[in-house]
Amino acid sequence: MTIEELKKYDGKEGRPAYVACNGKIYDVTKSDFWSGGSHMGRFSAGEDLTSSIGLSPHGEANLFRYPVVGELTAEAPEEGKKSIDPAAAKKLKYQELYAEYHPHPMMVHFPMGMFPLAFFLQIIALIAGGSFYFTFASVTAMAFATLFTIPAVMTGALSFYVNYNCKANVYLKRKMILSALLFIVGAYASATGLKAAYYAVCPSAQGMASEPLGMGYTIASILIMPIIVAIGYNGGKITWPR
Image (cartoon, rainbow, N blue to C red; front, side, top):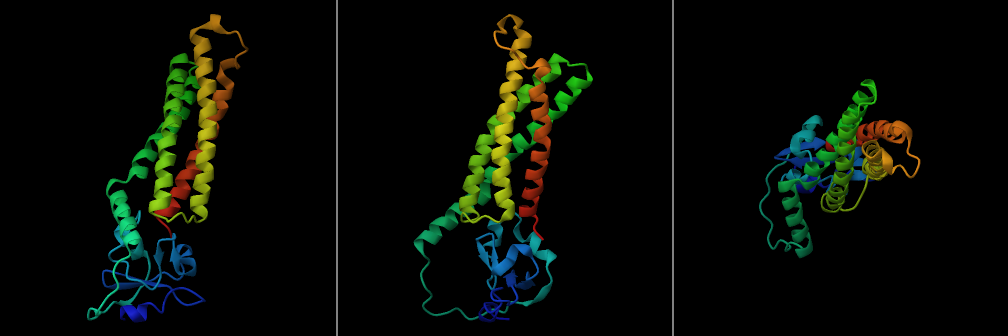
């Protein structure tokens, strides 16, 4: 199949969706992530993705899941090809730079690891009869995780612009909502936990009524876990789509 023939399989108006990569043609028609012939606002069916597949979070690995329906034949170079759009070339540079350094994946692992740590430390504190040392360690991890949520969300916004052209599918939308919720719950847990820890160290400073045993912190640290799991699940759906 030539590139011109491949263009007919663009996934629109009920047509099959085919993409080519490294000479092989894959049928992605049944994938939810290629609905209407468009993938994440960046790629279109009916195209050769060989030069651009490396910019995706998963690379060529996910294409191996789809059936191979043919091979892309080489064509003679066309005369007088159109010049590359400067804006598109500039955007491609940003995409290549992003793909090289992966700022969002690097930053997101800090809060995704420290929030569960805070949760488990608090559970240990409760099992140990309200051990202050474990609770203090838990609160410290919670506070740092909440702070790291800010650069994680900022780099996520950068990824949304560079990698996905500001076009969100259902999983990206869920991650945005859940990330905002994560920061709110984390900020509340940090403030409540630090207040309880401060009163424990300085009981004479209890001018205001404190929450007994940091109960608000314990509840918030438990609520953090399903939010983290939901963010991870939706992130996995983006990285490893069907």
